[in-house]
Length: 87
Picture (cartoon, rainbow, N blue to C red):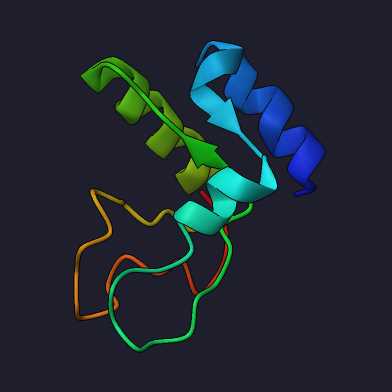
């Protein structure tokens, strides 16, 4: 599925200000404090409620879009790096 289509579908779930394809925001979510190679996510979302998280996950599951949860990026293990892109 194209990024534009994913973004359009996400806008049915989240307000526009909770979705970002901005390069700087994507860079901030591309890695952690580890030595591992950074990979850009295609889209970053900022859900505010459990229901929003659930709806994003349903969309991702339906469309086989990888999802990488991200907290503060202070990890040293590389587990927050979206090596397959996605959300």
